[in-house]
Every structure is written in C-alpha cells, then in structure tokens.
Length: 174
Image: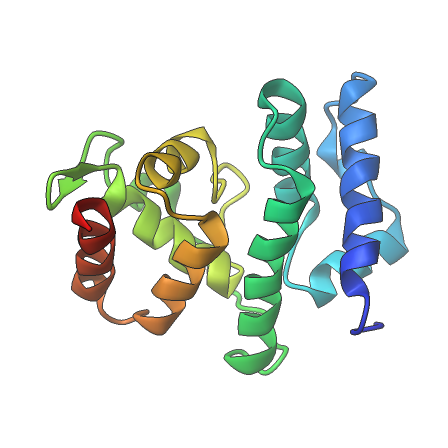
C-alpha cells in the first residue's frame, strides 16, 4: 500500500460508492473488487462503512469526503500505532449500546457515541452500527465537535469514559 497518498485511493473508493448508491445499487457487498477491499482492510475500514457514509451523503449531504477521510485517518493511525497493523477479532454488540435517549452530564446521546467511537477506533463496529451516523452527527454538530476530533479525544482517553464526558461537557459549556 502506498502511504503518502492513500487518501487519493480512499476518495476513488468513496466516490465509487456514492455513484453506485446514486444509481440505485443498495448491495454493499457488490461495491468493491478484491483490490479495493484489500485497500480498505489496510486502512482499517470495510465495505459496509464506506457504503454507510455514501448512503448518508447521498441521502442527506453529509458526511462529505473530507470528513470521511479525516475519520479514516484517525482509524488508520490507530491501526498502525496501537494495533501494530493487526486487526481486532472483536465486534461491538449493537444490543450493548446505551439507549438513544441516554445522557451524561445532561448531554443526550453521549453515552451511546463513546462505545461506538471506541469500536470504530479498534475496527470492531458491527455492520448494523455506524460511527458518525445521523444521531452521532447531531450530537457532534450541536456541540461544535468534529467526528475525527472526537475520535482523537476517545483515543487519548480510551480507558477513561469520564474524561471523555468531561471534555465534551467543557466544550458544551465552554
């Protein structure tokens, strides 16, 4: 894999997904060839994630490619630096997520996005769970936090949910 300009390959893959979704193809398993799937694995992504981002972009205008690239840059760095290039065999159980109306420090959705962000960092998102879905984006946008910025905060405080909550609360009240 070329490291210097991997984001160019990511953009080609993302645009392909956007085009396929716009054309009516809803089968994420048919989107990418073996080389493209290999590329996605090398940056810690998968076809379903790219499909989800393309779907939300086509249907709602976000996230745009810059945001997708920034999110995957954090994931790619985590894969390389924390996981030494080895993917995790774990998988987030969607049923373990806090409810959509759960709150921390009065901030709705915050307890739900934290385990999703951790799973995104580790490459453990269940195919039915999306990091930076509409609900995540609402929380982040409302509180002026970029999705990639939040991932970095989660990485820095991976074993300390209260530190993540405090950081968000400070941003909210800041």
